[in-house]
Length: 308
Length: 269
Image (cartoon, rainbow over all chains, first blue to last red; front, side, top):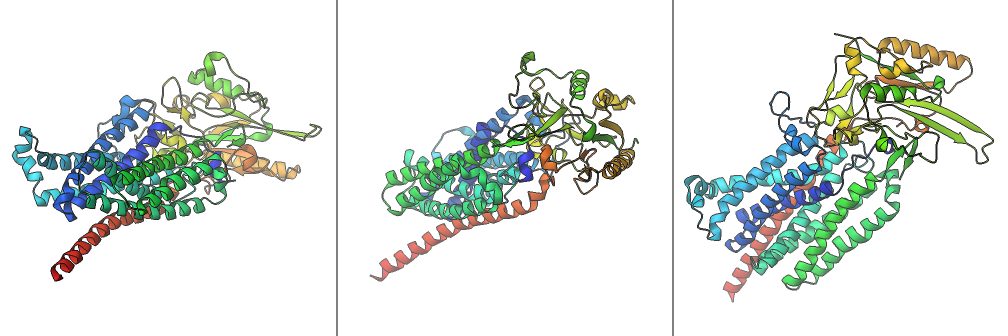
């Protein structure tokens, strides 16, 4: 029996599942927006802007759900400042400590990127005409924000998998592939989110959508490989997935969240079909995180016996 | 500077009286479960069932009976935080709430903890949980307040059979080794120490004398630090990040090449 079975559940539930989902999308959306902004065509810019807005909203929502998940939410700042001395609190070897700073930095870059592109929306806010804001929109600073924000976005999308691995809980600490899996899933869900937003707001031309769809398909294929690696790496712990959790993973995540959207997108078609495929990808991404968190939570020790 | 202090628990003399549980609750003013309406476990004479934020001591009952109950064996073990020399909880705590004291014990500072619960997931023994009154993570402090006053921890003082022994780790190790030798001499060849050597997380400052495999007592065979996964997991994540970024970049480049090919094709007509 794996040593990870003799541990207790941290009771991380829906707030954390939501964070894993939203944080991944936010990080991925920033990366896609930055790529479209730096390497894309002028026609891609409306969708790039949507990506930055989604990243900023996602960063804000992430901070909110993470704080709400604390059993003492009013002490959220203890993660950033040492409560006794007021000095910065940072542990390079604790993924949660690094992650808090990563999320804060990411939120900052998402804010700057959003501020820099807002003028393109034709808004008449006087703040957008101020010198420093205009400076942000110049090619040099904008590219630097895009690059640094993308790095932090990728970090945000993946560190949560490392955080789960750096525990002693079943499934999470039994594999080294969760970070990889979450990153690829963040790629696919972010592309899906952007496609849905673009379709809903009627932004961007069909070529932008098709570029995103092609990226999404590649991510889904890689995700399938990463999922196989993850399940394979569990060894004997894979028995935990033998029941309902395995069925959900196979039918929900692989079937409805990867294979079905791949088939839908492969058949081509207009924005409506892409939107349907995107909704499925998003549902699959949420379900993946739900299964990863809750299947591990189900295992605990009562007395001296392990309950599954 | 005081020397490392801790517990040596000889499970062979534990009688399951739970005086340690009661003494711990009394001294540390831990609340009762369900406002005093304690539910029976229904499948064991042990009704505490596990360590958590309100139970810093838990006497485990290992009740092994044959189907017709003609044969049986009782084992008892008073479980507690192991105060690991290399502590997983302390390693991951993002607020600095978990500290190592001058007695080499591990203590959670309730006024700093914000209840992120990472320590619960990091502990290899499932010791920590949230206390429903303070809403922070709590566990045995090895009676830090009593130690500072030169007193013996409440559980060890209450134990009527000296199953729980408190003292300097180096003295406890000598005592434990002598007891194992005695048991071997008396024919109990399965007697062994759990966590007394430095191989297990640098040594457990609360170590045990067991007479069966660790798993029988609900203990992991080879508990490890959470950080063992840090490098490998980070490496694969960096690989994932590279794949996502490259796929995005290549996709856009591919599109530009296709556009150029289309333009050139169009110009040629």
